[in-house]
Image (cartoon, rainbow, N blue to C red):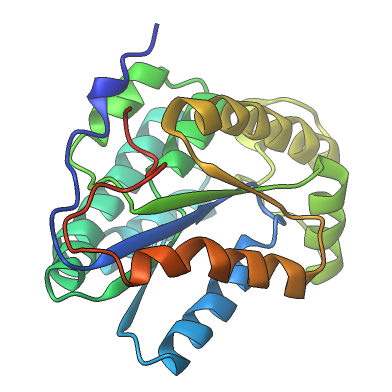
Length: 237
């Protein structure tokens, strides 16, 4: 049994707001977050963007490990946790303290879904991220697997080796392996949604409809009192 107190006990007591989006590859979450950032800036808000696996500390190591296909599920998990820790300390927390709106394209829930899909223990992963501030709001972009796959394949010529879960020997064909791996990740996300109270966005709806709903979801938090506990914030309840 997973004990949710292993993550979610570091509330955001700063004046800033932390909004994050989650979902499988091809869910459209990144597009929506980019549009939201543009809208928030046009409204005069200070916006800081944070992206998964983007810390310069581990970027070179991750790239080399992927190129040589040396990364194990455990090393993958530890590298991403190191990346996340660096971004929390250098980018996310300082921005929240300064009263900025932080938009994160993927957060701890990505690790909870991907790492477990690769066979890492769920409780271990949650303990690994116990230092993470609880987001103001976490939104999961739910999309059928075949729709997500079509979006990915129409955007680039081929799937990446680790992205397709080829390291797990799920299937010799990269496309079939991708389907199986992403299906595993999707299953974990569906467990995470009720566990941490993530909001759900129907990612099959038109882009403009999703964006309008996303703006409506975050707007109440833009004018709320600093330090007010977040409704459905994505942490332990």
